[in-house]
Every structure is written in C-alpha cells, then in structure tokens.
Image 1 (tube, helix red, strand yellow):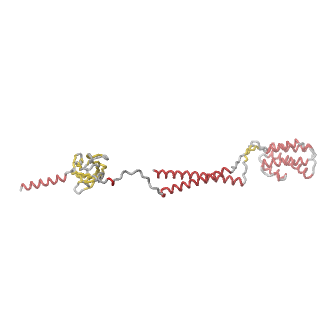
Image 2 (cartoon, rainbow, N blue to C red):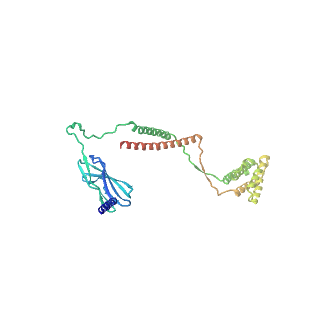
Image 3 (tube, rainbow, N blue to C red):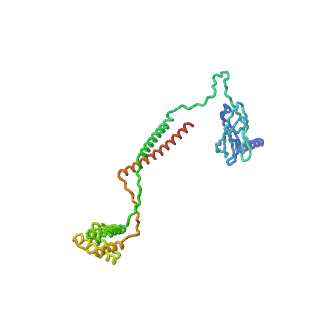
Length: 363
C-alpha cells in the first residue's frame, strides 16, 4: 500500500514538473529543396506568460552553417494557451547553393536568461541533373535584346512633337506680322503755355505799339481792347465772356470778386465805364477823346494786374490723340504679342513632356 502511494506521488510530481518546463521546438516545412530554393524553419518557444525570450538573430545572407544561408527572419507573434503558457514563434528563411545533406544544429532560445535548445534538423539540397551527352540541346547566353517597336508607346510623343512644330510655325508667322507692321509711337509733348494775364498783357502791349488809342478809328481800338479783356476774363474765371453782354460780364464778376467788396466795387465801376464807352463807340458811333482812350486802357491794365494768378504751372503735358485706325493697330499688336507669348510657353511645356517621355522610353 505504501509503495503504491509513493509511485502515485512520484508520477504527480513528474507531471507537474513537465507542465512547468519551458520547451523550444523547431520544425522545417521541407527537408529537401532544389539548389537556390528556400526552406522555412519555424522555432516555437513555449513559456509562461510574461517571460522574456531571446531568439537567435542572423544578418541577411549570414550562414547558419557553412553552405546554408539565412535570408531573413520573421516573427509571428505570441499565441495564448489554456494552461497559462504562451507560444512565441519566429520563422527563419534558409537557402543553399550546394547540393548536399546538411545537419542543422539546434536553435538556442534564452527564456529569462536561461538557454533552451530545440532538436536538430536535416536539410537536403538537390542539384539539377544536366544531360552532358547531348550538348546540341544547350544554348549559349543571349545577347542584349532590343524591345520590339510599339507604335502605341511612341504615338503620343510623335503627335505632341508635330503639335510643337505647328505651334512654333504659327508663332513665327505672327512674329513676322508683328515686325512688318509699323508700331504706333505716342510721345507726350511738354508745352509751355502763357498764363491768362500774360497773354492779355501781350495783346495790350501790341495795341499800345500800334498806337491804336490815338488812331482815328476808335471802333477798332475798343473792339480789340474789349476782346482782349473778354478772353482774359474767360480764361481767368472760366465762364464764356466772349458770348456775353457787358452787363452779364459785370454781374458774373461781382459774384467772382465777392470776397473783396471794395476792390470789386472799384473794378465794377472802371469796367462798366470801359464797356459802356466801347458799346457807344461800336454801336452809336460815339466819338471819344484821346485822354478817355488812355484812361480806359489804364483801367484794363489795372483790372488785369489786380486779378492775375501767377503761382500756377506754366507747362502742360499734351498727349496726342490716336485715330481709330491707330487704336485698332495698337490693340492688334497687343493681341499678337499675347498670343505669341502663350504659344511659346505652351510649346516649352510640351517640349518638356516629350523629353521626359523619351527619357522614360529609352531607359
């Protein structure tokens, strides 16, 4: 009875010990491959959850043994189990270029710093049989072959090239037209003009030089004198004095000179006297005395001197006006330049596309 109990306890301890052990297993998917083919070895480490495992690490093309290379290693991750353990797997991709039978040593995995080994494996590499008795069946190395010409590969580049040539032809034609047409050049002229009082005083000086105030024809004298004043008033104050009566001119001047009542009243009396005398001479054949003519001339000069503006620009920019034909010519030239620019830019873009396409086809 005691013996049976001891055996039972011994068996239970063995089972518990087996369940608590870490195991490392290695399996190969094919024990026989052709030269250059690949075989995959899956290494599985069974351990407690939370344990740290360190699998063998190989660099690409590193030999696990002489003649067998490790191309890559891929970790499949961790899989849980029902007994509190987990499985962690790593797949090693192997290849060989020598036909022989290889012994693959055990894979060592460290779990929590303690090494555990898998079982060893075998890998047989089989060469390809070559029939050396029939050499006529062998073909030597091929020379560099050119790809066959396919119109579909070149058609787009061809038609784009044709389009570039046509566009450049159109651009050249438009350029010739643009060069053949005489451009419209407009120059702004700076004209130095006389001020209103300068023009009026120049005319009065001419009247004095002609001694018209002493002539026997007072009508011509007063006509020139009043026309000079009317033109000055029109340029100075901006209303059409040439088409107004003497009374209308005096009335407009009173409003224009309202800021200085004393000066306006004096001017009004002198101008009224001058225009009344001129109207009597021109329409009533009134005869004047020489001193009366001189007094009216002096009144005109005083009026101009008291109302003149001197601090104004004496130069004026004059831009010539283009005719309708010239305006159409300028517009046409602008359109031609814009079209030529668009064509040149488009041709450059298309040329870049064609060059890139040729590079892609030839390389």
